[in-house]
Amino acid sequence: MPAVISKGTRVGADRPMPGGADAPGAGAGSSLALGNLRAVVIVIVVAFHSVLAYLASLAPAAFPFDASPYQWRAFPIVDSQRWLGFDIFCAWQDVYLMSLMFFLAGLFTWPSLVRKRAGKFLGDRMLRLGVPFVFALTIVMPLALYPTYRVTAVDPGLAAYGRHYLALPFWPNGPMWFLWQLLGLSIVAAALHRFAGDRIDALLRRCAATSGRRIVGGLMVASALAYVPMALIFTPFRWSEHGPLALQFSRPLLYAVYYFAGLGVGAYGLGRGLLAPGGWLASRWAVWLGLALASLLLWMGLTYLAMEDGPSAALILQVAVGLGFAVACTSSWAFLLATCLRFATMRSRVVDSLSNSAFGIYLLHYLFVVWLQFALLDVGLFAIAKAAIVFAASLGLAWAGTAALRLNRVGCRLIGEAWGAPCR
Image 1: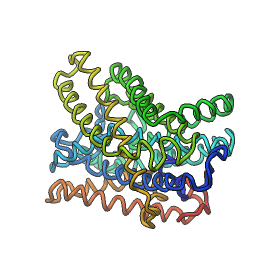
Image 2: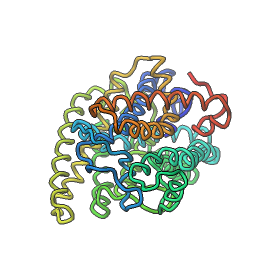
Image 3: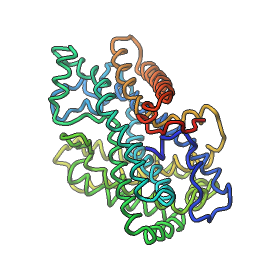
């Protein structure tokens, strides 16, 4: 997530408008809004994982650590306290949040490629995504998942945990799968710039220069084309069970669509076209909210009907579920982006700090979330209270942990930052 939740500088602050087409400061409002959106995104990510233990739809008991399909990967802790509101919240975030993150990551990729060229860009990506990914897989995730093993283990000892962990047919990624998929897309973008840079640049600018209505409409169609066939082939929920690179089979093409959409919009320039603070998208935030909620409810209803029928669900129903997902994804993405462009234009030291620490928080928060959910299992509190404690404590601890890692060169590298980078 380097363009979404990394670095110690404001989003886009060191990235001039491509080609010098914009007047100085033309994209300042958009850049500030996108920086604030980065803070909003990391808060949502932490909140999403914090409430997963308290979904009303969860099984009555924790999922066994050694049994396929290893559902603890999504729900590492299962609490007896539940609230249906968390199901609705998580369903909404699930349809669009990662697509938004890939879009934001793509926004600053092309200007960075133009400035650094492909070789230096890829070297930076390897350090700023690859190193944190390896750190997360080898250190963060084994520490985070011990409580998950312990709640169902016959032998809760650390040695037994190590044996069971190493016996898994995959390396648990948790939320870190985003890093390797983003790195893969970055490699594709670098290859396009290296071998067809001028043609791709012209194509990206031409596509992004079209009307906001066409961009969003095109994204909705592209989302359906990328998602529906994959969901029909693999089901919407199937994950890989081998190796270190976690993959939800129904969504890689969908994420690529949003990443390359971000690539085009970023090539055209901040503060212009789709990202204009007073433009077509931002001025219609209320419309997108209504469409997002309506399409979310439609998708949830269709999904419920399809799950009731199981594998025998009619093909037309499965297609309708996929189309509902695509519409909910695009409209929810448009709503949050439009809302931040319209309203999130005020500078705040707290929000700046949160935005600048977002990548470190992303890497560390899962460790605190799982342990806190585990610690509260036998505490006599309602689900909302438990979730609030997990969220607030996890966000604060991960935020503080990021600040601590910044104190030395190795720590900076582990959270995707260069030593001595300005941290406001």
